[in-house]
Amino acid sequence: MSKTINLQELSERLLRIDNVIIFTHENPDGDALGSVVALLTLFRNLGKKADAYIPEKISERYNGFICDGLYIKTTLPSFDYSYCISLDCSNKKRLAIYTPKEKEIFSLPIINIDHHFDNELYGVENYINPKASATAEIIFDIIKNSPDWSVTPNVATAITLGILTDTGGFRFDNTSSDVLIKAGELINMNADYMCVIKSMYFTKHYNLYKLEADIAVNHLKLASNKKFAYIYLADELLNKYDLDKTDTEGLIDTFRIIDGVIISAIITKKNNGFKVSMRSNNTNYSVVEIAHKLNGGGHKLAAGCFIETDSIEKAEQILLSYVKDLLIE
Image (cartoon, rainbow, N blue to C red; front, side):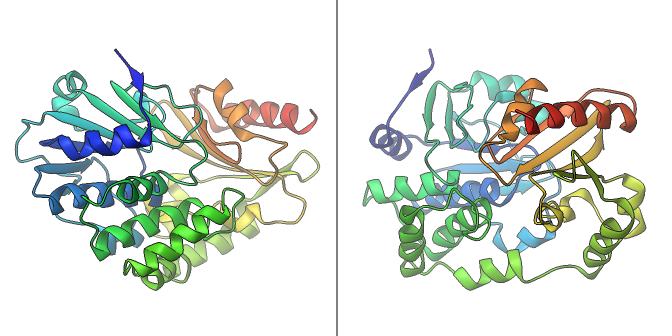
């Protein structure tokens, strides 16, 4: 039976359990990775058996933040865990698991920790805090709840990574006075704040810089009286600059800032359809409404979905119709 628990119950539960495997959502971003690294390290600091798994390549910008026990795009040495923890993932379909042991994973008690308001509460125990700026902020709240946690600088840095990326470097509207105070506390815990800032906001591969210029000149499309800006990021375009999709995190921010643009999107090919990542610059135009209609999810200002169709033209038509309807409401 699934139940919702409070922060005190969550902290006590995590302190009691052992033999844990941690997962997050597909295409992990900074919050997903930071939350995983922080909680994994916290468990290991207490001498608990804990591992984490990500089945796909992560962006190179995160290479300096990975830790022992995090298995990326490899096989797990063994599988005899007692608990599964899901971080920053609103539904089981998006959970990036170790597929050779899918049956075993979903037979484990799942503790679901997230900040997405539309979380489907698929865990045996669920702690969901939509007021948190990031799942990493929830990890911070966990360690502040009990002195029994051993908080080392790498834990503080990983939490900082998650909070900074999900608040856009404290530029997004989920930046509260509380989270700014917590960021200060993390610095006092010896988080390497400047390392996170430089890695996330002041370092860019030259080929990515060229891709951004190419997109601005040749590929960016505007619709709905220039209130909607979007691109189709084709594999051929990525190959032209020897880039991978994981290298393009944050690319959407390069054109969402165009004056007059309210909604922005990146479309990419995936399996039998097209993945859509969306952003909104105005809470009156919630892109998660579009995502929900297309079996996706997320936040009001950042959401994603999947359009199952055989051509980019059809995918664009479907997306444009939903965006048009939203913008005229």
